[in-house]
Length: 213
Image (cartoon, rainbow, N blue to C red; front, side):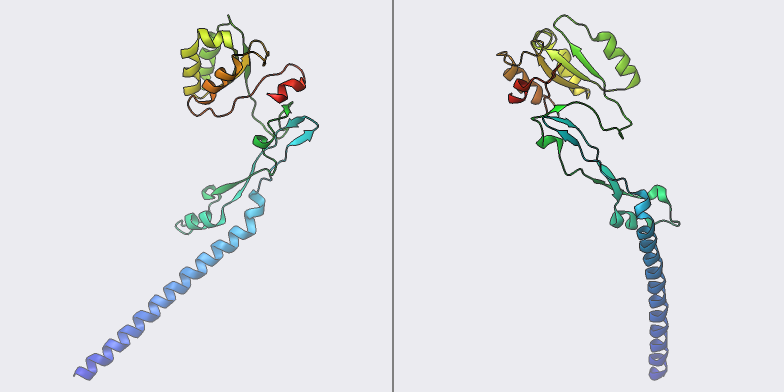
């Protein structure tokens, strides 16, 4: 009797192993097909990075691209019942020439393939930006404000609030007089407020002295 149950147990074990192995093989085949399909189509979804254009002391920034993150996309699609391109996971393809490493140049334009635009406002000592801010808030749009030291002193709380709301505040100092003694302290305050770490200067013309700051 014991031999009989032992024999039946072996048969059940072998059958269970066979079923399990078959399921693993089917799963492996499905996942392999997913990987093959991703590899087949990934080039169709790649957006190449566009390098900046540098001429002398001027630069037109480039634009990062993107490509399918094969590993992350595979993990997502393996849990899905269909091969859905809306589930693709992307990772950035960065430009080789970074704007951060070319701060000693004038930005004279924008990447022609960039479909977005930037709003830039020059704000003098006695200007009011309340109406501009109302329009921006209503449209949920962020802008860059180049403000003079006079405006900054009179409207300090407003400037700090603009930064906290996601706008960028840059140093126009005394109408582009970057030799003004207030330039350094104003820049320090702006770059230490919130997440704003960069502080760009505005130049109406290609004044090389500005690049020495």
